[in-house]
Image (cartoon, rainbow, N blue to C red):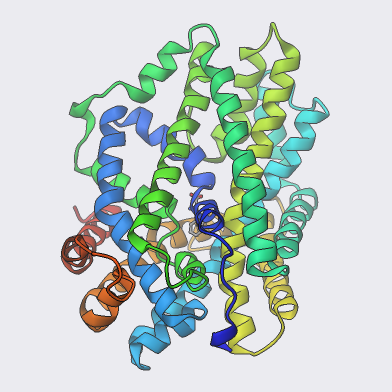
Length: 453
Ligand code: PHE
């Protein structure tokens, strides 16, 4: 079965697909806010440092496990672990995939609703009205659930077409569209009167703001943003060709991901500052603050404001969709290979479970009689917290230890250098990062998150 394993058709397609997984809501609703509030260009430099030191080595490690294992993430870890307990890292990845899909699909569904709401002119009104619109919509029991199912069905339709005909083809369509839309919005935003203050807020370096908390926040964000720690990267790498240069690919993907995050800042802050609205982060930024920003920023050009708003939600939906596809594929590849069923069946199974998790997440935000809470948090918030703050860093931590200390160095080096055909000058640096730097840094993120340091 592994011999006939599907492969990405081209290097360009492979990079777009993997970058599609990385580029997502995290780039748009978290990064700009973190950068703006934590020292602007100084934060961006720290972030780039984290990507180089932690992101790229962790990504290469997942590439190595995926390409060497040439199977779904659970089996890839199992193969390399010779059946020892390390194999559970792979299973944990599949579980994490299901948990992230649940709440991510809910937000992606909201984006779809907002495309239609902006097109129908429903988001016009004062800030109170827009905030109320979102609170009422997200808490209602039917509509958001239907949108969650809708985005999962779209994801399903891509995944059932397979690696080349589905994932790669969709990424080749969606990612360039996303870039064009993003650039269009950046230009529109930066041309507004008074937008310079927003650019300054995002880019003016202020090193005095960079303390250890900011540093660790940047580390966590690099991790989440690059989709590391749950098998997305590992599963996609299992579709890489033997000739793919892993270091090069990781650098390219990180570059695209970071560029999109910075551009998202150049889309949000200039327009927000031009109308004097203080931007925040998370769902409230996207669904409450920005509709007002777009409306007010383009009062003299209402048609432009109308188009900008629609384009913005299309862009968000595309960013979320390509990430959802990768999450779905992690789980689909698992079912199809472990239970030896067809891709269609495996994907259907995943879609159904994802719809159930998604519906529970969505309903947990509403006023139903069901008490959908875990540890006092709504299911939605609990899944966001458990996956982003615990499971992803933990998965990355274990992966580094596994690859750095358990997997034979020869396998790691062979993969890194494509069996000696590449020079591999940086192999020593890479191995040092995976053995020491990454585990220690991730440990620090944890201790910071739980208030120990
Ligand atoms: N990287 C995605 C983002 O920035 C989130 C994600 C994490 C997607 C893990 C898949 C796996 O939004």
